[in-house]
Image 1 (cartoon, rainbow, N blue to C red):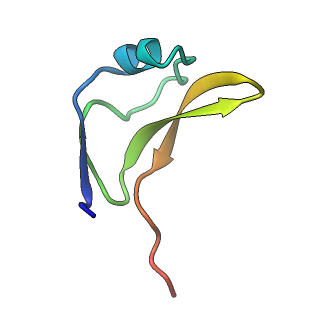
Image 2 (cartoon, rainbow, N blue to C red):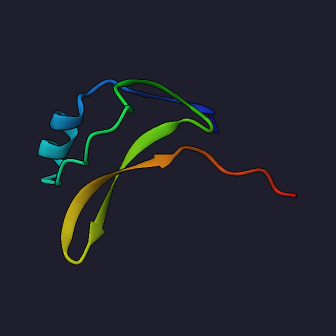
Image 3 (cartoon, helix red, strand yellow):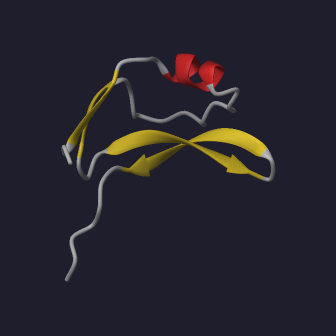
Length: 62
């Protein structure tokens, strides 16, 4: 599994494609998303799709 994901679409394009609510203002933007960085996910909450900003990747096992 690769540790690098690249988001090439804008936040508005992703929200439109998934009929999702746009997230509140954030510093996450299109481009490379490295493990531990922030990236966008589309999730369903109470029957409505929304975009959320989350830390990308798995946390280390201790």
